[in-house]
Length: 188
Picture 1: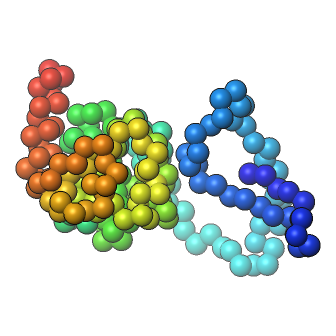
Picture 2 (picture 1 turned 120 degrees about the vertical axis):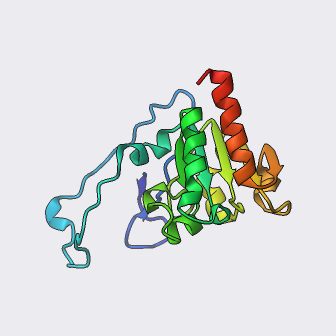
């Protein structure tokens, strides 16, 4: 984050905030930023913010941004139980499970798994989107993935426009077969 002096007559400096993994680091750059912590006495000085509850994220959830493989589910997964085959595929690939906001809002997964504009920004080597339409709000969180495999029964789902491979079909038929084949090839 960079704080600059006002140039347009404003009284306060401009502050630019960027979500993690939004940009590829510049080669030769240090990847470090100057951090100026605010004294604790300033936090909540106006009384506007109070910690009501704290829910530490599970280790697997906390590392979603660092996962090299992510298998994510959306509204098309249909229920919390619908995430079971996605978790099995993620396990077979050595990856993590993520979700769209629709799936998190439905209560099928914790919000810590949400990928997108109001969730996490990820940059895996492989992103597998299952039952995710590919709305722009979700795309913002995963568009820097190196490879995108989308599985959706809607041939017109927006995710098909930017996926490297778009499989049109029932995810509950395709995902278990894909998982079984990966396990077979890995000898598990």
